[in-house]
Image (cartoon, rainbow, N blue to C red; front, side):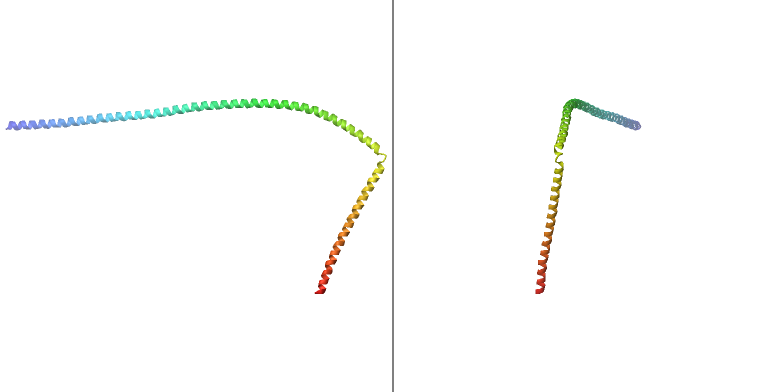
Length: 198
């Protein structure tokens, strides 16, 4: 019995030792599993972070590339616009130059024509002035004989018209005064008769 109890105690001890070993082993396995899981999750998180960074970098790179492409396209457009503007400026400059040369030629032609016309006009005026002076001197020579009689005739006609106008105005004034006196006398006599009747 003592042997049996001893065996039973030894078995219980070994069982307890085995159970403790199993607990330790299980705890070690759990700890190992947890550390492996933690490592795996950290590795996954790091991979996700690197993938996210790569995605962000790729998006930034794509955005920069599209921006550069748009800038190149805009630069080409601006270059085309500038080239077009330079062509238009050069065309307008040549057109102005051509118009200026045409205007200068026309001005020179007009000035020559005007110069010839003015020269003709000056000569014509000189001839007309000479003719007018000679005609005036001839008229004075012919009219000097009866200049005094013409002067006296004009003076007498002027005096006669002046006196006729003066007497006509005087007569007209006198007539207006008579009309006013007559209307005043008639209305005054009516007023006097009405006062006498009243």
